Image (cartoon, rainbow, N blue to C red; front, side, top):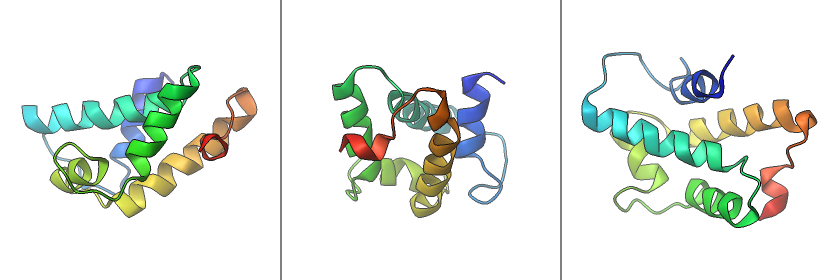
Length: 102
């Protein structure tokens, strides 16, 4: 399974989202979240750290993780555990825990 499908499943997990056709604006927000999820596994430590900071920030400013989730009808408190669970599954593939990087 390619990474895009895995990342998209994380975002649109049945527990987090009711599937429907997305607008262009929603597709952009999904792309922002997917980029943050991908950056968690980047080999550059500063990129991983930025992704962690983005995903763990509680700010609700425009383009923040919480703001993007809310505009996609996602509960950010449910999305993060799904992402962390996914990250734990692939920890054995050579990726370090993103939480240890903070």
